[in-house]
Length: 323
Ligand code: NDP
Image (cartoon, rainbow, N blue to C red; front, side, top):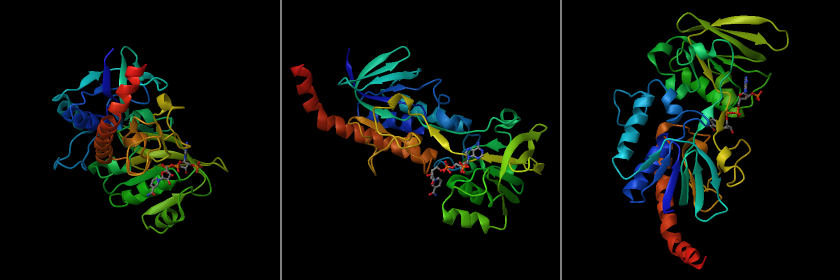
């Protein structure tokens, strides 16, 4: 079997940008788009209704259309696309063996761009009003006309929840920040920022019980964890900020992960702890999580992989010949 230069795993902005750069560097990348694992093909952007903050689209673009365009651009060059999941990586072998559900590839390097998924809450009404008032990304969706001058709610007590609640004050008439404990998990500075904001009302010790409405979200029911007393809040938007989960099961035990499961990379690069494996986008980024930053990291990963292949190919070929 031929040894390929690079296999890219994923189909979001990081993966397609890595494919574009790797293909233009004549690395003839193979991309496994993934179909079932940890979300859907195209990643989180495909669940975003409208993207207004990706440069180059002055009138905005839908998430699925942006991904379709990225894929179309990468496919103009020499990219082989397998529409399947990677089920195993054999890193004990050099080159790596990347096993897909139908195809297996020998590759010198791997770019992991499998993304992450925002955790959601499986309460009654969640599925019904998903994208009809319920979202897991205030920065992506908060500025939509639907939410303007309306009461909104954010669930969570971490830095993301505080940041999202604060961000939403630009558009909302009022933001309820619903925290399940009697205290925040967020840093002091973020706590102060939300506590002192006149448009934010923090409700501690409450959990979300239900999302309600006719065709779109109109209200939520929350419950006091101490007394069991329920109350209904009229809101047109509900934003989950209860953490993300990166899709790193296939590299567990191969590369170093942090305690949540994010791929650790050498600061300022996409190098993971395993030589020849690079990570880009939300799989290694818990801080920025934007389509544009993921695309930027995809570019970095392709450049890092290209340099690594150039630096190591001679050594690697000698090793292969000695086998
Ligand atoms: P965190 O895991 O820090 O916080 C998640 C929050 O959601 C916690 O308050 C948790 O409650 C709550 N939660 C979890 N599950 C539920 C549930 N089912 N119902 C209600 N509440 C729930 O995630 P973040 O995304 O906020 O942050 C992730 C990392 O990224 C952190 O290290 C954070 O510091 C960092 N970050 C930094 C930013 C910055 O510096 N500007 C911005 C955003 C994130 P509980 O506390 O009770 O467990």
